[in-house]
Image 1 (tube, rainbow, N blue to C red):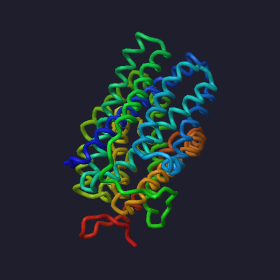
Image 2 (spheres, rainbow, N blue to C red; image 1 turned 60 degrees about the vertical axis):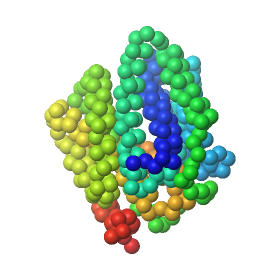
Image 3 (spheres, rainbow, N blue to C red; image 1 turned 45 degrees about the horizontal axis):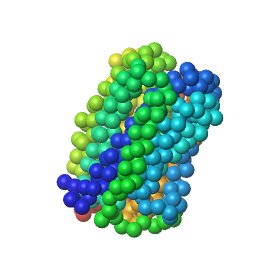
Length: 385
């Protein structure tokens, strides 16, 4: 159960999280069609925009300096406003330069909100309930993604791109403004260090965060491309799969949170990485559409297990280090985004199985790394010295 004095920040983060998901999903679903049909972008330009989208994630560590000016709930609300404003403006500037700028605004808002969200959860909730808080947010995010797809399906038949962007982006920004005017008091939070924090004793957390980011890039860059490019899935089939995945995750995420509480981070992450070895190798070598769909769903499910990396960090961290370490962690998580899709695309041209074999090897390395997490008799986790 969430303590009474923690419920306002919980409701606040749920509201902003749902809005951030609606904003990001709107951008992602509309981006390719809008870029080609309205803005007339080339394939190279589309790739450049996608690269720009990852820059704010790589620069999330700068959030530490923003915290010198504003409290974290304020930054969270301002980030959602920026996300909504960037999205709303997208349809008004249908050009390469316009999409570049609006994408940078949207992505900055999304990544800085995600950084603040992680930090605020780890600061304001007890270790015994943090996994359930993260899981509840992931469940509601999955529901928000489904609702967004439905809204876009309906609005897309009634309005042009400009109005769809304005309505959904403007709605997200307005909720951010509401959040800015109704910020909750942080009664449980410990004052945070307002400087960059990198500590040797957090090295396992940094490593697992980097590997999780690399795993995410392999999934984002190559799993859907495998479905479309190798198995010839239609847009409708991919959309149905997207909805199915989010439905499964809506119901499954609370169980993942309970599993972290019951079995601990080491066991849950061990299951994830052992499963990912199987998933990636199957991606690479299966010839069956049914099998590849099952692997895609499993891949999505395992992605939610990464919550255990954050709850593990909460257990080993100095409470004053959480906010700056969350910012550093987001940057580490996005390092792979700078080079992995490009390198993976090069080796894909040689053999499409190579990126997935690399993913399996990386999962094996991560599986060995999580064995360094130990559970002492106190029930709290620590790194084995």
